[in-house]
Image 1 (cartoon, one colour):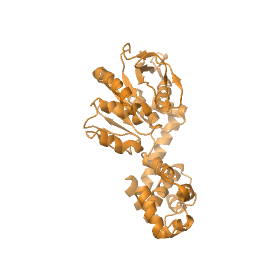
Image 2 (cartoon, rainbow, N blue to C red):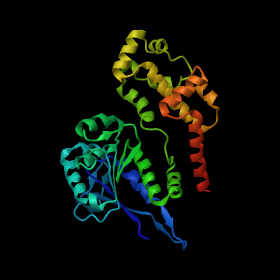
Image 3 (tube, rainbow, N blue to C red):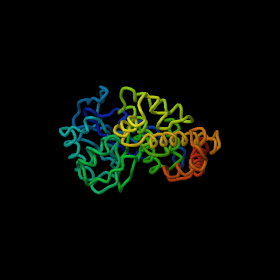
Length: 332
C-alpha cells in the first residue's frame, strides 16, 4: 500500500513549529497489513515557490523537497502560519498556486496565521474557520466572508480545515490521522508525542492568562501569576486593588480598559480553567475541587462550570477519564 502524501508549504518567515509539528506527527504512523508487513502511513513533502532554502521566523533554514512547478500529486495540503503569511508579496504567490491545485487535493488545511494565505484564494468564503486567538479580529476584518471562531483549536468545513494557535497544528494532525487510519493509530501517535489525542476546551483556556501578561505593564505585570497561585484566597475587587496599591475604583476602571472585562469575570475564568485541570487529574472530589479554587459553594461552582463549558463537572470528568482509559488500553 502506498503512503498518503502530505504537502506542507514553506516560505520565508514561516513559523517553524507550524511546519515541523505536523511533519513530525505524520512521520510517525506505521500501518500493519493483514500479512504482518508494515509501511509508513504518510509521505511528507515540503514544497516552496523555488528550490532555494527558505528561513523561518527563528532563522532556521529549510530545504524544500519540491517546488510549485514540480510538486507531486497530494492527498493533503497544509499551509503553516508565520510572519511571511501576512506579507502580500509572499502570500499572493502561494494563494495562486493553491487555487490551481485545490481541485486535485482531497484536504486542505491552514495552521495559525496560514489562514491569511488560504483565505486569499476565496476557498474559505462562507465557511466556519479559526485562527490564532490574537488574529481572529484582524482576519474577520480583512476577510469578511469568513465565519471566524477564534476560540476553537481546529475546525473542519467540507474539505477545508483551519487550526488555531501554533501547537494546535498537532491537534489537527492527530485528527487527520484518525480520519485516515482510525483512533488506535492516532492514539499511538499521541502517545509518542506525549500529548492528548483530543485536548479539552478551546484556545481561551490558554489565551486568557497569556493575554493578561502580554497587555499588562508596571504594577499589573505580575498580577495574573499571583492570582493563579492564590485562587483559594480572597480575590475580591478590594483585595486585588490592595495588592497593586490602587483604589478599588481606579483599579476596576484600569482593569476593564486594559482587558475588556471586569476583575470578577477574569478571576472566575482563572478558577474554572484550573478546576478543569484538577478534575482531569481525578485526585480530588468535585466538591473539594470547587473549594480548592475558591468557589464559595459547590452549587455555585457547578452552575459556573456548566455555563462556561456547556457540560457539568461530573460529565466532564467522566468523558475525560474515558478518553484517558482508552488511550491506555490501546497502547498495552
